[in-house]
Image 1 (cartoon, helix red, strand yellow):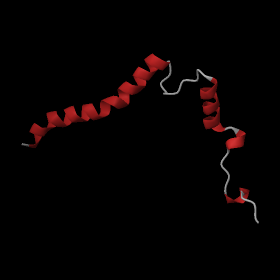
Image 2 (spheres, rainbow, N blue to C red):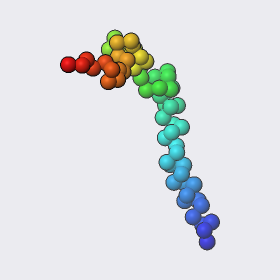
Image 3 (cartoon, helix red, strand yellow):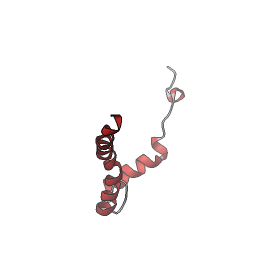
Length: 68
């Protein structure tokens, strides 16, 4: 019957969903943070500062394009 498919459904579901729980825990152990970025070098610090939102990198719209 239909309930005979449940064990394989749960097994496949566990294999699909497991990386979403395992990867942050492994990164917490390896990097000390649950996020993948380490700021150990000057370049990494610059990229992190850039991504957070430096004033010079704010997105501008069409109004920033000068009229010719």
